[in-house]
Structure formats: C-alpha cells, structure tokens
Length: 178
Image 1 (tube, helix red, strand yellow):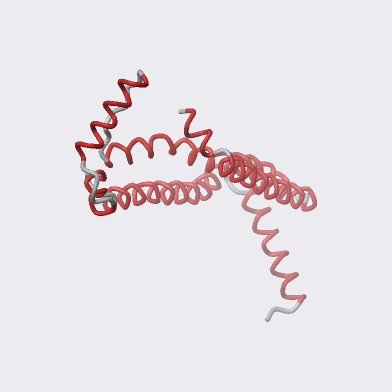
Image 2 (image 1 turned 90 degrees about the vertical axis):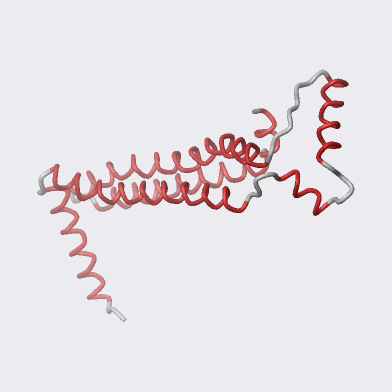
C-alpha cells in the first residue's frame, strides 16, 4: 500500500516524464513512440473484425433454408421458393431467394458502417483532445490538462450512450430504410 507521500512522488515523476517527453524531445521521436500505440490499437481492431467474420463464416450453415427442415419439418425449399414467387406476382415486387451465406454477407455489409460510426466518433473526440492535452502538459498547465481529460472522457461517454440508445431504439427503422 502506497503512502500519500509515495503517491505524490509518483505523480510528480509522471508529470516530469510527460513534460520531458512532450516539451523537450524530438518531435519525430515522440511521434514514433506514440504512433506505435496507435498502430497496435488499429491492428487489434482489424484482428477483431477478421476473427468476427471468420467465426460467422464458420458457424453459419452453408444453406440456412435447409436447416429449416430440422426446425419445421413440414416446410420444404420448394414451398418457400413458390411462396416468394407468388409474393412477387401479387405485390409487384422483386424478392429473391437468398441462401444463408448471401444473407450473412448482406448483413455484414449493412452493419459495418454502424460499427465504423461507433468506433470513429469516440475516437474523434479522444484523439482530438489528446493533442490539446499534450500541449497543456508540455506548458505545465496541469489544471487545463485535467479539464481537457475530463471533458474528452465525458464527451466520448455521452456520444457512446447517445448512439447506443438511438441504435437500440431505432434499429428496425434504420435497417428497413436501407
């Protein structure tokens, strides 16, 4: 357990290290040190998307309508295709039969932009605030740095809550519009 004096010394050392890094170091050295962390975050995000798509491709059956036979034994594929054809004729529409692979690909294509927005807007706030935070630290303006940190945190949190609630409330309307 750290004492108050040890915590204060640790805090002072962190501030001195940050001031030295942002105030005295070569800009290229600082850029490469900080860019590596950004690169790792982007790499992990890409790995997440890649693994997510692999898992979806692995666990979604190659033809989902044939899986209906296990759930609803009285429905066959011919009946489903005939129902689609009748719907098209009576409602003057152009519905097509989709196997589950095409359905998953369409769903991913429609929802990737939502994931992009969910990731981009909070990052926009935090990355923009990090520049202001670094400038305040290098000028030894710790109060301003703390205000910037708190403001960017609460802005990212509010944006996340806003989008999460709006997309959960209006998911059906958003997806049916596309």
